[in-house]
Image (cartoon, rainbow, N blue to C red):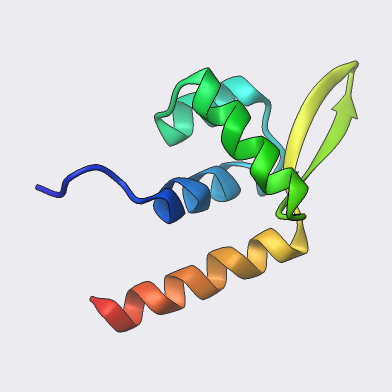
Length: 83
């Protein structure tokens, strides 16, 4: 069994959940992180252009940008080389 996940693994999980758009609750449960961690990661991902915020029915929806999708793809390519 592996130890705790890396920062990059958590980022990829968040980006994958948000590809079709997701609220923070869905991100928290799908990525198995707490709300504080979700806010920290989302702030980072928004700052660097991996995720964008949309308003849907007056609520925040987080969606992975093209840059975020590229990150997912490149990360998985590196993973394939490693394992």
